[in-house]
Image (cartoon, rainbow, N blue to C red; front, side, top):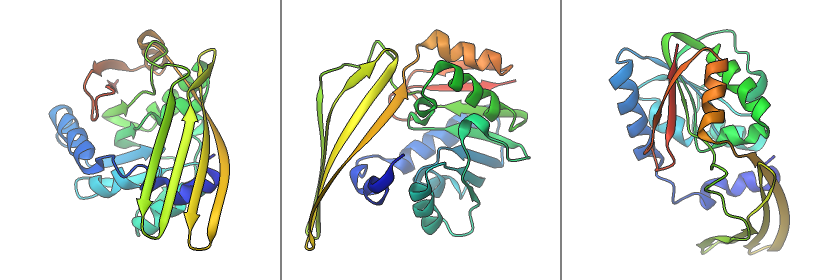
Length: 231
């Protein structure tokens, strides 16, 4: 789904403080499951959270997008990475911690699929394990008609990504327009990302359907909040 933009993902999100986010995740896990040793990151992207977590946990990543997963593999030699859809996740083992960060759960695209994804992730929890989900933006927070711009300005490469936020019912639509300039010339392309927006009650319904008891941490790892669930 990231298509041609996967190669530029880390540059576009260079502002994101993965080590600090990972440290906050470790703190909340250790406060609840101090003996946790294994961790599965669902929707692991290019593996930057895993890179910061691997010193504390035995980690595995699951990422459906081939381009992002290849970057993660290059970054994390020796770390198992699987091309798995969160809706139909089936790895045949359990983990002390299963996490899904940076709003990746929104890519399930419907409330029903979010329930399926959380149920699938819950099946991978060891006894006493934690499922930690960072939600995508809620419907009452998301604003349409707002222009957004990300710029990368490096000597050898200039990248511009622009979009205006839109929605279709409970689905946020990010129609990204890219310009990439290198010494070889300028290329342009587009990507359309669709992420479902759920409110607190809908997320709680999904965790209940998976047989989990959930708490909400309003701050989370970067201000968007976290759902922290266990049986």
